[in-house]
Image (cartoon, rainbow, N blue to C red):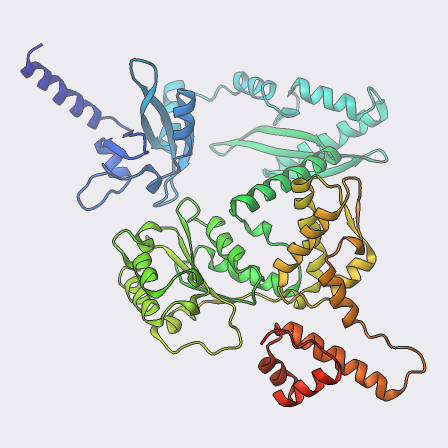
Length: 550
């Protein structure tokens, strides 16, 4: 074929592709767009140059299906949401293979979902429900039935029949009749209210069944409803295992969700509500809380439980950097401000970052602040020190979130202990199931100066000492330092003790606990006690209290 004819065919192909009534994208192995037709350009609202080439698919909608297409080398369909406006689009992902059958790129075609449905309806003339519904029911992985709106015709699959027989003791007519009546009532309620209904019903004495009933409404017309039944007790057992497994995975990957923040105390509930409010806002967030209160967990949750989750989460621990290295790390041409893209940058202990670098960061972010920019989250555990007067702290302090110390939310200690215990059971192959009452009492009396991180360490220590058959976490599994502190904290008052001796014993314990709470910082302890440093040293010598560190 001549070069002229080849050029004619190439021009014809480009014109033909550009006139497709749907979007077409060609992606390379990095999921980067290398070709897009006119429909795709107009639909995805490209940049001012009107091009999509060079952009990544993730900027417009999820790229999860691309990996699956590459692995399976199959054509796959899925409904996606456009990030720009939330519009549904029907997408077809097709692998492009080389001569050896290996995937070398991906073709994505898409069309607005409503338009796609209109085209299907126009071509077929109707929705063939009588043919489709039995297939949907039969091949469903769950126990499913479909009841038409006239309630005269019903389809159910083999799994439905098997589950009903098992639940109803292989043919107990009274149980079966009661179940049929309950399901019929739920169908009637679903059709009448035209909404999804989920109920847990009790049949007989102790049979619990979860029923999900959902109406099928197309173009305003009600065709009937699907029902799905599950053994509620069995379901709960698997849900607990699944939730624990996914929680452990998220803990390992540090991709936390709000459900991973354990506790129902008023203080924590308010902090979670405030965090959820901030999650999808494009504002800087200032986290304040003592060491170990979960500031990094909250920062990661704000990222991974928001619309930024598909973009990078970058962590900068200020204590690990000197000023010059930190400056290059943040502001270099390929520095962290460029890497984070539309994700989240979390600066831990921001007060350790030189003020001039923080002010520069605030100025740069103010220049290109837009819905497309990243979210900045910073934290500090320096609660008793006044923040420096600077542009950065004036800017960042508008959206503050303070995390309560564990000693102020003691009702959360036991749920947290159980969470750590379950995680450690999987990690160390232990069987711990409950915490003894005397350990619960100790936990509630303890001050937890290192907060949640200290509780986590105590629970892990217990797991490493427990035998594989042990089911109760008792005092013998607790660290020695913990037990020693609690022994000193518990006053050994006896009946008939002289008043002065009781006062001295109380004063000794009070000074010891204050010192521990301040990490043996004498200046802070004396200030908190309202006495001079000299008087503090006198009392420590009087009561033979170890002077500790500084």
